[in-house]
Image (cartoon, rainbow, N blue to C red; front, top):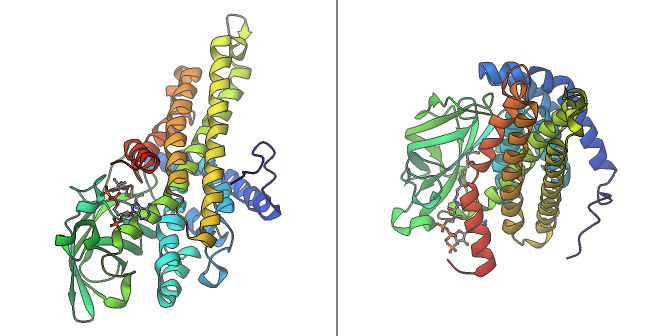
Length: 392
Ligand code: CAA
């Protein structure tokens, strides 16, 4: 495959530039001014999330008939990057709604499921969530203990799921449970759950280091009966659905890392032009200017991998090919890049980088999660090396 010229971004069309500009304007006007306040309080920013839904940001790749914006993956990453430059918490909620929630239903859902479960989330009326992890099943996702047992025209769901992004507020959730434990990962099935269903409850909200305005919690199922028509895909197909949805999700997390790093870099450039020491602007010292050179180079390398993954995903819609390798490489590199860049940004700012008076310390805290959720860096290395060598 030949790739377009990344330097000129000539593969971006008019629509891409339009959504990028709309997201940038919205993010700088509505999100950036409230980011520090919501980080401090840990409150879920529901009002701005609703507005983002009205702007079409919650289902960018969803067809218009299901409440979405009907655009492609490149449009999604360009818009998400702008939101994450302003605030990674808003970005997390947007990423989960778009890729972990809506995308899986579009790919595997029935017509009725698309109508009933995509439309309210893509249009921003409701918040969606994706629930795979359990207290004893994180990276080893195929070993979950929660059970879904068929009972006539219903499944009865029991179990405890953890680390659910938007868990405290989500109205609609894609949840993965064992229907046949003897079959291991081939015994996992996926279900669409309305949080109003009796037997569904939410656990305590997690106190977190970063992305503090994106609420995370456990969710619990106690004899929660859902109709058979709410099963997503076939029985036993759940693990494959979970993994292929994570391919899409990982492009979103890579983009989040890119947005955080760009914000930290922009703050650093501004600071080194103003701050003086030993009779010079600190940006005139090689020790500082070389840091900026490394930060910028890694940011642009991450952007290249992310755009390549976005193009691979768009192509996959026609060919049905997997883009696992591209997505994992983008997430691995971009998340580690964001940790490097935000660490250097704090160092460049010195004491001010450690102070809550500037957003730099928030960028540093927010970056860390990108190396952990939707598959740790170690899991991405496992996925990439297995695909390259065929060994396991
Ligand atoms: N697309 C489609 N199918 C896939 C796939 C993909 N990307 N990856 C694997 N599969 C299929 C395989 O083909 C295989 O199919 P068969 O049953 O037909 O053989 C099956 O899935 C099992 O694959 P593996 O043998 O590779 O599975 P494994 O048990 O060795 O695990 C793993 C692989 C990569 C470690 C996987 O478990 C994994 O990605 N773990 C990390 C989980 C993760 O990212 N969790 C984050 C949850 S979301 C979150 O963070 C919270 C939030 O709200 C944002």
